[in-house]
Image (cartoon, rainbow over all chains, first blue to last red; front, side, top):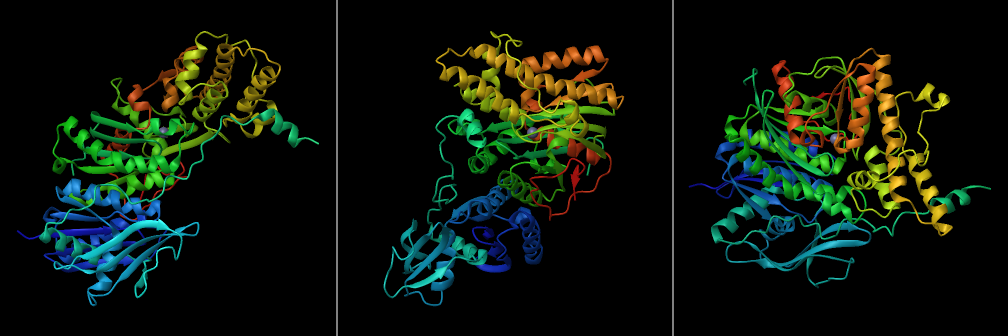
Length: 215
Length: 351
Ligand SMILES: [Zn+2]
């Protein structure tokens, strides 16, 4: 039986592709990081129509689990999970950096490559790869981990910023991993950081505040 | 598509409840609610990022449970519905992304609807028969405090007033903290207040002075009340006095409920509308229901309160509103709508 993979990644912009038995049938991508929720529906619709694939024919849904900015990242993961649920397809949670590594290493399988995502606050997410294995899957030697820029440096390594994550390569990798019998990630978004909340130490005093505000 | 009694699955993720509901026409088949309330307890209020993360995890289990409870097959659905707004944008986006993909995976039409109007729509699922119009609706929760004039559920809803600062539910949470009570504050205040005297302390009624009433006749404000409670408590704590927690809680609760119900009944009278619908999680407050009933009775207003599981945020109300739209021939939404954190009530159905 054929593997028909709908691949979805919103860890950077929005990228969607259909990959059948390792061949990319269609794809849509935009680097826009502000409109994931608006765009995702039409993109899914368009890639399926262009590929001539009915929703019920989709056997797997590859989901880029990040790392990436929280709000946008979740739109794609939620969509992938819901599509898999509706179509009765198998969800394949994946590391988004792996797709970029594969795109880079596909033409140069002996090279080293570090993939980075800006994590803001002077930090970045880094995954480091040392080439492709026998099955054509990137060998991840480190990460994804959050660190200061320059903290993890490998000489002779290429660096690629994950400003656009190609769902087409994510889908191609999903196919290779399926064929090779590789394990996919658990269903957990790769936030790599706790929610930004500071614990309050009880209610603030108002009497003082009021006095402070008066002259 | 069946437009007589459509089978609709609704997805609601506007705040801290992941709601999946399934209705057939006006019949409720499933109403699954997964709340992340416990995760917010340590912060003393809803943390948007925590809520959004919880939605993503809760979505699939809630979908699975709702479909099983309703005893339907997904392919039998006539449509998928989702809350487009108002609400927390990161939380809304999880539902919007999921709903679009679910609709596409099933080749079903998608209806994006308004959360606040959904609260009103929940009423059609009750056993008392369809709501008559027009009706005034008071929606009170941790996220909103809104007074609506509903001339028609699917086509004509007007916002008469809303809170200009904190939502009523938020005020309960904050005062609970002042009194050293746990989150969520509503049930805690309610519990403690049972032993207290509601007339012990006269706390301010926000936006009820004549000058405020001109501009904010149907608006609410609870920030000043919260500060007044804090000041009252601090002054006595500083003086080493024991705080009569039950009296403070009862008096605070009375102030909130007095303002909510008096402005609402005033709206019924001003607009000559003899019907009132309550919705939102604060409806769980027994004293609110009691005072609302008394004041509605003496004003000759029929009061309706849906079952509590339909008052808190839920997916069934979203499915119910979409079902009404479908029965009236409304066309599905496009695939291009987004999450709108400030969606006005006049946008009942987002295209
Ligand atoms: Zn609500």
